[in-house]
Amino acid sequence: MTGTFPAGFYWGAATAAFQIEGATKEDGRGESIWDRFAATPGAILTGETGDPAADSYHHYPDDIALMQQIGLNSYRFSIAWPRVVPDGDGAVNPKGLDYYDRVVDALLAAGIKPFVTLYHWDLPQALQDRGGWANRATVDAYLRYAEVVVKRLGDRVKQWMTHNEPWCISILSHELGKHAPGLQDTKIALQVAHHILLSHGKVVPIVRQHSPNAEVGIVLNLNPSYPATDTEADKRAADMFHAKFNLWFLDPLAGRGYPQSAWQDYSANVPHIAAGDMEAMTVPTDFLGVNYYSRAILHDPKGGVGKIVTRRNPVNMMSRGWDVAPHSMVELLTWLHKDYAYPKLMITENGATYDDVIWDGQIHDLARIDYIKQHLKVLPDLIASGVPLTGYFCWSLLDNFEWAEGTRDRFGLAYTDFTTQHRLLKDSGYWYKRVIQANAVVD
Image 1 (cartoon, rainbow, N blue to C red):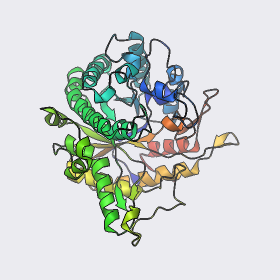
Image 2 (image 1 turned 30 degrees about the vertical axis):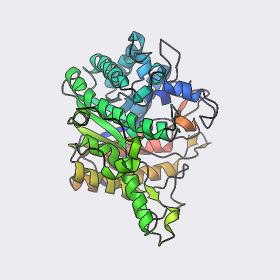
Image 3 (image 1 turned 90 degrees about the vertical axis):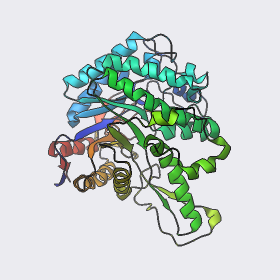
Image 4 (image 1 turned 180 degrees about the horizontal axis):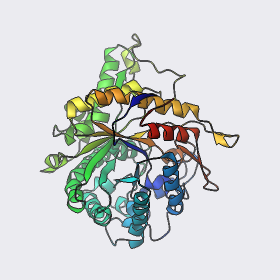
């Protein structure tokens, strides 16, 4: 046994509503942009939609039993906006709120602390039809939706996350077109990013008002960037990636505005900023959630071939082609603590996908165990150095609908049979249980 964690450390797993709930047309739920996107031919690798996904809408007691089996003391999940306000800004659906009431009460009865993400990508399609997040009116609709949710759950939920991964909401979805709504327009993407950050700043006081003594934060996916070679072109590429991927979201929240290098590079595509917007973003928060999976290595082929300074190890990759680089996570968290001084940091997603196979009635996912173990092993020394890391949430509790990859990519600690909806704890789930019991990394 090596590396003990502090008392009270949050040991959790994470999910998102659209990825696990299914039941997309039940009990008054409205259509989301992901329902529309998944129904578009060719959008999802496997041709699947978000229904039934892992059917957690009906199987949430099974999922909470899984959490108890693993020994989790916390669980991160999201609220489906179209389940609560089906058309985005109209009538509230009581059956949607009732569902989340049941989930929260069941978690608390099981001794598991709920961590709730207010927005994890499932915008009501009715709002998208009016411009989506590029339309400033969506900010107001989000604030109203969030107030409805927090008023209902805020007496019991004390850990809130405003948004998950603004880069994915904006750039991946509106510039690169890989996620819903599948647009390819840089100017729209940057306006979306601006409105997401603005809505974060404006919703934090609402959460505090209706959930006394709550902790509120935002979740960013962050990728440390490195030049592939020692050429100046690669160094510039790494710097620009860092500015656009990381600083574009971190700096405005810290009151530093948008990074100038990226602003200039975006040129005429920069967002419209109204008076007071940048100030609103800087509302103090209690923590920053960090989603970390891998690092980014940048190469500009036009810059010539220099000496390789950063190399991917093909032996040390997950099945998505992401390399396993826990040292980069250490560098990232150390930098965040030093340069941004958040009161608390949490790893809100970290995990790996491999080609799981049931053999002898079990899933012997040694590669996933190794991935998680490598990332956990570096944390006790990091915490001892003064980095205020308070929790680790493995992605994911169970195999689910992995967005544009459908159900091909399996990140779960538990295997999901998407035909029978049977859950089977993998070896990684049993190993994670031993880690939690020991509050330390175990072999």
